[in-house]
Length: 278
Image (cartoon, rainbow, N blue to C red):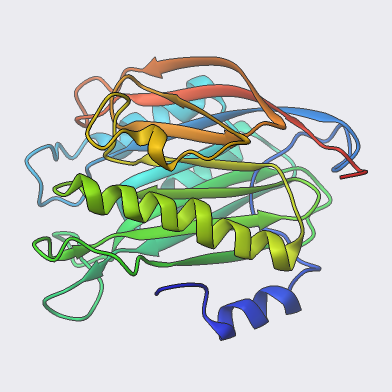
């Protein structure tokens, strides 16, 4: 979709009393001070169709979540049924509060339906977050980009969740075979989608993590889609974490996936500075 549809925006405005998304520990209260959390990005190559599929990615992802205990997890190249298994793992490592799960299927150009994994499940991107109590509901927004690589049957998608008083969180997996299209998709998400959410829901610190299929020093360069007021870190390749400057990246490191997928995990320790006077 070119922008957030009227119906989606109407439902977002109607749901401003609800929240969806980035996770926080119980203290400090939302909107009152800095919050530290771990952000984990993983591309799991779990469609069953690609050459990088091993059948071991979900079990390895579960091991990483148990070991690293992130509070916000962004997932690329997953099947819809993969999400509940990892949701349960995150709930186990963070007892109390609530784990929020969101999924957005990629489109399929030939069929006009969604792209599907080998087992028939919808294929796409996901997001998991642990929210401290009290949980105040949640809202999820997602869609496919208006610009797509016409040579690729997979229509790339974006997914955002919104946590009033906490943060906006988004993930995406951009076009793999046409870098100019990937850049256009990146700009659409950062320059169009996120600002529309902010205009209707209010400004909040923002985290975007995903496989952008763009690199530092590439042509085009990933930095061409990172506006002023944002900080970007990467895994040395195509996985990127982009945050607004009210989020500090305190640490960053790759996480080995033991050959279960063709990308390392990317783990960032961040501090979100909530300014109640913003």
